[in-house]
Image (tube, rainbow, N blue to C red):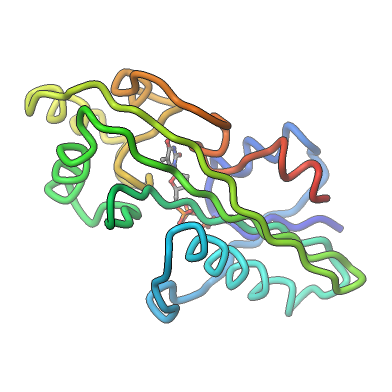
Length: 180
Ligand SMILES: Cc1cn([C@H]2C[C@H](O)[C@@H](COP(=O)(O)OP(=O)(O)OP(=O)(O)O)O2)c(=O)[nH]c1=O
């Protein structure tokens, strides 16, 4: 049996490109309980914690979990608390290149675990306050790390990327397919 330990609709959609034969069981973990470390390490720690929360309940299954963070300079940008926080995130990212890190965890029925991180560089156009406000008004920022969705209207903010597009959405499926 294959279980996706996620409530992210994007992750469900992306995993379906690998297989449609899986179940969804979101992991209930307190992300604040984990020590914050370097971004590429932190997303792996979170992905592992989410995955183990489910694989402990289903040791016989293959369990997949992931965690996506936006890193800019020393800041780790998760999902914005509110519109003001989202505005501040996008203002900081405007005209600059930031990195999106997704940690991916796979638990196999034989008990072995795999953990990887994939990083994509994303360059934003310079954004005026009005452009940011116009983007926030579409509301898609609310459940997105870094307050934007590359797969939606957020595409209009992005000048270019270096690396895996799907990694920015939340699941680097070509890497995951090779981990399974
Ligand atoms: C940067 C970016 C993030 N995202 C989303 C992917 C993730 O759903 C979310 C990052 O938050 P996560 O905490 O990684 O994931 P989640 O809480 O949505 O779901 P779960 O923990 O149950 O797996 O941001 C996009 O959809 N598009 C983007 O361009």
